[in-house]
Length: 371
Image (cartoon, rainbow, N blue to C red; front, side, top):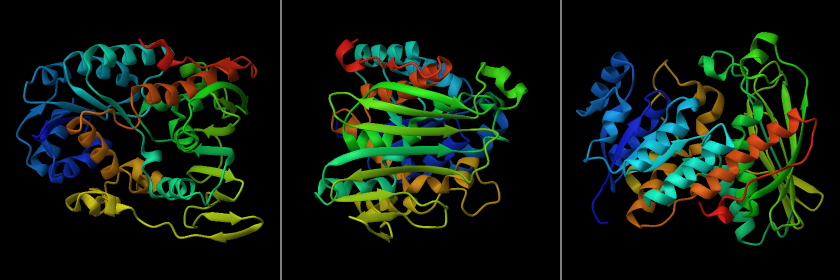
């Protein structure tokens, strides 16, 4: 495929961040946007000069001028919209998480396998500058053999759309899970998770999940490694943190405690702060600037993911570039559908374990099932 990938974006809140990236990417063409709200659709499409606009997702999927769909809609819609797009013959990029049930993860894998189109979960945590730095330590041998990994994602979701209220913490665990599994280059195999504390009763009633915090220990498939993941969404006092730590036999990397600080690397027992470089040079020149800025930077209407998420570590142009290039190069993206399903089901199975007082839960092996 030597032509530009023709992309449509569904969901124009957080999704609007990707519009100028695709517009300026040398191998992409943003041809359409989709938003249920007519007012928001007109506002965003007018601002970016996009003529083709839809407020009906199913109608957009019938458009033969669209090769790929980037889904940035509410979490409850991810599974059905991903499946519908794959069945319509479109490549799919979808913001996290892939789904909120193991059954739906299986259905997406099945739809991808049957369609032959590519699916990529747009996981920001494995395209941040911090992840690239830790991966360099590993790939160059400086880290040595990984001995243990730890991830945390603590966030106050007050003020977010209603479907977030009372969401089980581990249902949205991919930011904490993914960098650990990506560094280990393994799937999660089994999990034991404990819930701790209580959220307000009106929140707990939404999903039947009472816990303020869920903390899990995972065994990795075909590996001697284990990893620890902690998540909270409500009624827990903590500055936003989306972190990972990796401990090697030669060097270790630890995330900073406060957002304005910088990470620490340890050589033996000696630790020092390390300034993380930007990795924009890995991208086409036209989109490099998006590692350090977003479309909301110069406005007072910043998206909550940017206010709390520090711009996702410069990951957005890297994600878009990987999606586009995977299609043009006719190869599976990273993460592919199997990896995306494992990262998502890790959190789903962790919550199941928490509801069963920490009983060990085995994760499905999506690769082996070969649906």
